[in-house]
Length: 77
Image (cartoon, rainbow, N blue to C red; front, side):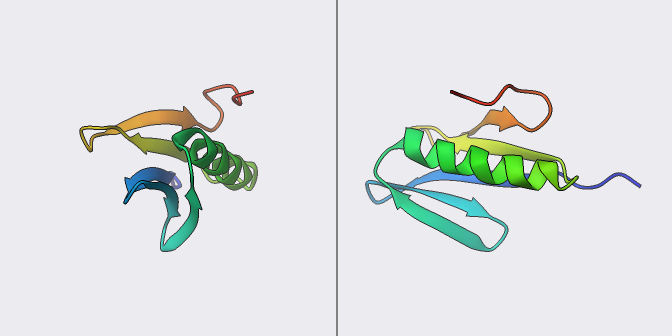
């Protein structure tokens, strides 16, 4: 049986950035980069526990783009 991928979102709300995973919120963060780093850290931890994970980032048009995938993309510096 395939395990569902855990999606972690980086969202822009009221001049701040937040990270959302399931029903949990993290932040606020002052920049997208800081929120992205937090999201990747969370996704890495989830991936290491055996659950596929990915980070999606909301862009300026409110569209979601893949930012990072556990086991596929290298960890950002």
